[in-house]
Amino acid sequence: MLHKLIDGSEGAVRLVFRHFPVFERHPFALTAALAAEASGDKFWAMHDLLFTHQDRLTDADLAGYALTAGVKGEVTGDAAQVFREAVEADYTQGIADGVRGTPTLFVNGRLYQGRVDLNDLRGTLGLHR
Image 1 (cartoon, helix red, strand yellow):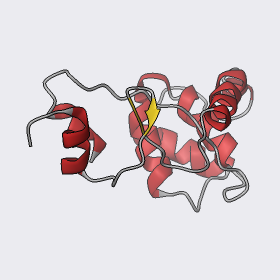
Image 2 (cartoon, one colour; image 1 turned 135 degrees about the horizontal axis):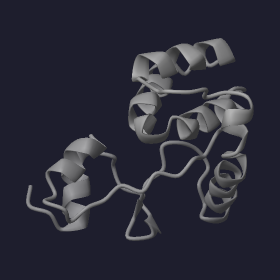
Image 3 (cartoon, helix red, strand yellow; image 1 turned 90 degrees about the vertical axis):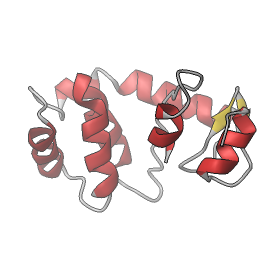
Image 4 (cartoon, helix red, strand yellow; image 1 turned 180 degrees about the vertical axis):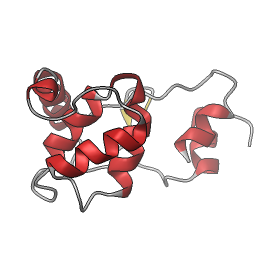
């Protein structure tokens, strides 16, 4: 739905993704976030695979998803750890901004409390329906 919103906005809307690994619910959430970052220009392909397979996020699973996404290189271990500080900074900022879970949307820097519906978001952003 967010892709449709952005694609239909004629450049008026951009998506800024921040990590918020909810490790209380998903023990491998941090590892998955690091793997997504380690995927480089294949981030979104990897993100989509991770989202689809939230219940299977072991290192072996992550390596398999990376192959499927066309990632060249490792996405676990030391290759992923270089992104730890940035992912943790996203999480810390999320807590400060009032994020309690995922997904959470902000519109123009403000926590969006409306329905997560394409038409409602378009209306909030002042886009033609």
